[in-house]
Picture 1: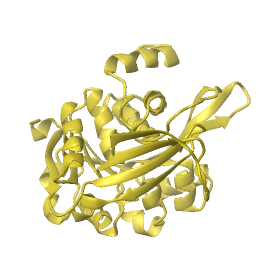
Picture 2 (picture 1 turned 90 degrees about the horizontal axis):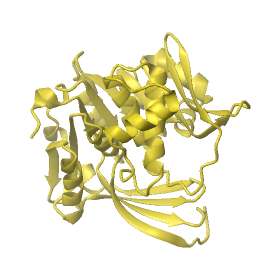
Picture 3 (picture 1 turned 60 degrees about the horizontal axis):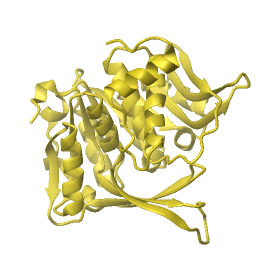
Length: 326
C-alpha cells in the first residue's frame, strides 16, 4: 500500500463497470445496429486517477463497489497501476454500479447509469485525514443526491494544503449553480465540456467560464470536443479561464474518424493535472490534456488507450516542438 503522505492525487466519485455499445448511429427513438459490445472499467474520477497512475503519479481513491465479480474487476484495475485502494468500500447489500454507453462513429454518445453500490457510500466511509493528505483531491459526480451532499461536506473540510479539482459532468451540471456553488467556490480547477458549462451557467462557454471564476473557481477548463475551426488551419480544442487571463489551446484542423469518445474528458483531466503536478504552464497543461485524450479515444473504453510516460513525452515533443522536461 502507498504511504498516505506520498499520495499526490486522491479521486472521489462513482465506480462503474461500463458496457460500451458501438452502434451505427445513436437514435432518440427507433432502432440501430450494435457493431461491438465491450465491458470496461469506468467512472469519471476513477478513469482520471487510473490515467494519472499510469503516468507515474501516486494516487488513491474513495468509492464503493458491490461484493461481486464486477466490483473485484474495478478494484483490480486500479490496483494494477499502483493506486491505493484501501478506501474503496465493498457494499455487500448492492451490486456494483453499471453504465451503459452507446457510442457511434461520429463521436456521439448516450450514457445510462445504474448506480448500485455507489448509492450506499456514506459519511462513515469518508476519512477526512486521508482526503486531506494529497496535493489534489479530484471529485466527479454520483447519480444520487446523498453522495453529492457527502462531497459538499468533504470539500468544506479540505485544508489549504489540498486543492480541489472538480469535474461535475452532465449529471451535476443539470443541478444548477446554486446547488454546486459550495464546490465551485472552493475549486482550484473545474473541468467541463461545452455542453456542460452552457447548461450549468446558461451562458456561452466563454462567458460561463468567466462567471465561474467570478464565483470563486481559480481555473476553469472547457473542453470543446472535436474543436472549433479558427480558419487558419487550426481549431480551438480547449479554453482555459483564470482571474488573470484566458488561454486558448489549439490543434491542427484535422478530421477524426471512428473515434470512441467514452472517457475523453476524464483523460483530458489526467493530462492537465499531470501537467500541473509537473509545474507546467496552463497552455502546456491544456496541450497535455488534449494529447492524453487523443490517446484514449483511439481505443474503446475509458482507459485502454492511456499512454505511458514515454509515449506522452514523445507525443508532447511532436506537438510542442520541445521536450517535456520535469
